[in-house]
Image (cartoon, rainbow, N blue to C red; front, side, top):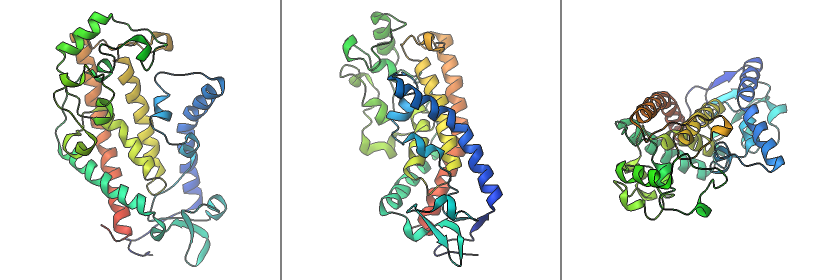
Length: 302
């Protein structure tokens, strides 16, 4: 069975896709519930708020299942009625699919650009040795009132923070981390990564580039499988924990033991974790890349 501009379509039986949807919801529902609970109580969280604020995908949409483009859900009309992205499949009104003809131009353009970015990242060797100093550079020679997480104390002195930044050979390659450096820290970085140079700078060892797999997934939702969105979110959550454990903040009260990157042992610990994340992100990046290409091929732009 084929559709316009597509390869053979996959048909997902009702029991199969509903089981998959339930498993995905179970994986992310605790995260969504915890965030909603904190928000209702007016509580801030220096680690996890990032996943819902910097990454601006509405939490409830993490709970929505999608098989992505090129796949048919048997008897899915009841669950997807009223959604603009979903259409009855030709000749079978109870079955639904993401019609390639309904892909918004914005999503098509995003898929093309993300494919280019993920492809070049995947071709590069990882640059290890940054040791998470971006969080330190965001505090370098900055007053307490200007800190992003000023309700949380530092675990190092101002002198130790400055020494770590000045001796640490800053080498951040990610614009969205670099842009939060203080004015005093930016000239100390090996490069000056701007938004227009992502394709030239981003690389597979970067914690932020690997967290961004979540961002690229939700920008393409529901046109790529929600399984990839779920996996990218869970990976981003793990990376964010390490990101903040390696920061100068004292978050022991929240249960986060520090990674003391100001020491040789801490730097080795950080790099081991960084290499593990890079290895785990690789197949996920490739899967998202293939889905981007599938979107482009389905609408005749591949």
